[in-house]
Image (cartoon, rainbow, N blue to C red):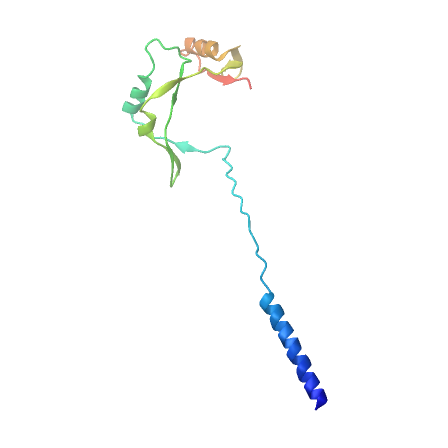
Length: 142
């Protein structure tokens, strides 16, 4: 009987200690830090539908004596649609502000050779003066 009481006493003490330990146990808090980084794509294909009237309106923003190399900056809204990205033509045709002529060295090229080199304005002038005879394009040297 004495062994039974000892066994009962040891079992009771062990149970009380186990319950005290279980009651004092708290689950560790695990914190997650989530970092979202937006990386813009290098190239996005977009399209715009313009009417002849909108194009004419945009071209009229240039002065009559504007140089062929003069540039204008048109701001617009780009929205995603089922076919990719769409540029809003209504915002695009609303107005423009002068944009500086790019700096650096440029080339006027034909289908097979470089015909002229210089700054952007002189290359555009050269290409414009021979537009009836050649299909020139102006590209950056960089």
